[in-house]
Length: 253
Image 1: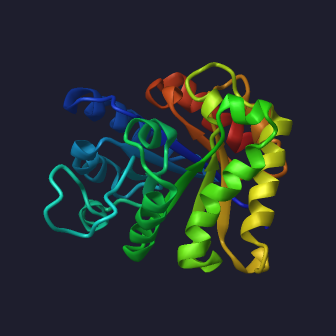
Image 2: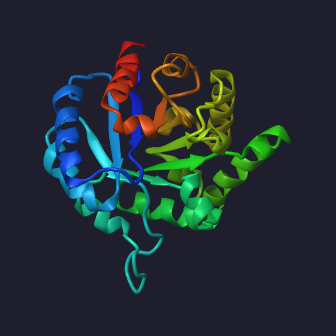
């Protein structure tokens, strides 16, 4: 049976009450007819209520770009998984390089966040990837492996059931220099084999997607890659025409 392609949109620190009202309403009107896609919008925290208000009752789901590793307590400025769940969030991006680099998040912190997302029955979108220096040194698989093993060693491979791993090479993010379909496919197959080292993936529902300068021009080749179940898009997620074109390409494959 053919799996639905996954498209997760990371709106990053963009949007406003007025922009979201128009944009989400437009998405609701035009994107609900994509029958073979699972589409998720990850918004800044304050706008989750708008997503719930506008998108409830559609096939389109929403979620967050980060989460706290704590459940509650004296952690000023943090937002817990329980809070995200109250707004109907399905997806939560975790480990994005723009956060791990700027806020020095360790692999262990990301693993704890991953576990909290699963505890509240949401779907983690775990971002893993290497820098350009690491790729040029040929150690990209070692880097990605260590990012994933931090979760496996603490919580076991079984925690990856009903999850998404996004291979997002740091050198490709916002650079107009996406990984080639061959590079993305090879790494995604490596990740799948790594997670399935002791489990039959036919019994584990997890998906691997690619992120990093995804656009309507390279989407055709990316969606045709054997190892990819979808894409994580950034800048294109707030450009309706570009976003719609990517979805149309995915629907047609």
